[in-house]
Length: 279
Image (cartoon, rainbow, N blue to C red; front, side, top):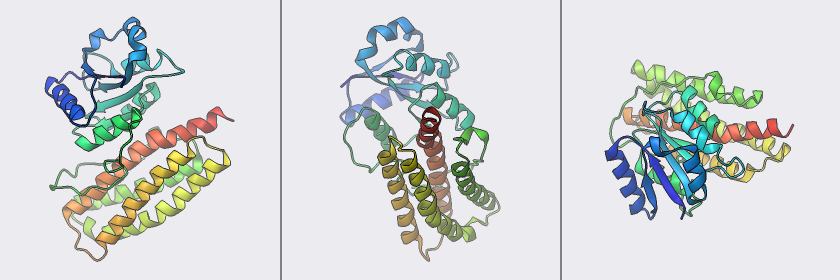
């Protein structure tokens, strides 16, 4: 297995991630200071590296510039990169993706999420148990300060798809505002009904466009859709006529938010870029 390089200023998190990866059968890991990552050094060890995990919250260096430098070492065969950050602003995440980041993880993160993303980028066979497309109810009440709104950074420049993304984000915003007023419980079933329709109509529409443009990643994208659709249908089945709790509201909010940020900025952006490049 090619080497994984972690650039993370927090020594505790460095040790934690290395032990977590080792526990899951992933070895050959090296932690480096950003000062050691120079273009000449990267060119020298380029073929040895399979993945970078880069902390964007260290102000001693510019994480976006570092991602861009790593990505541009070999544009035909770029090294995979996962960015870590506490900052969930779409503008920052978009910059990371456009610089060459393959995926990102918002801190604090679930252990399974990190393992899933690392194995996926290293092309290691695994189950979809820890896929971010799977719904996971919160074990504790958690934090409901998770506002998320539509903005231009989420546009993939396909008008009909952007409009459909706006519709689900609007539903998210409505639930968020109602939760602040303590009224979200009555809206929960309406949201589930919307999601039930959305995962059929929107996903079918996207997949029709994939066929029309002969999208090269259409099968992978369809599989991601199916995972999310299964999660939504399971939520509906388990919550039919069930008393809605605060944890239910926060769980569905986080689930939708994480899906939208990752799916739009990474998976749907790939499709938007594909169309632009093949016009």
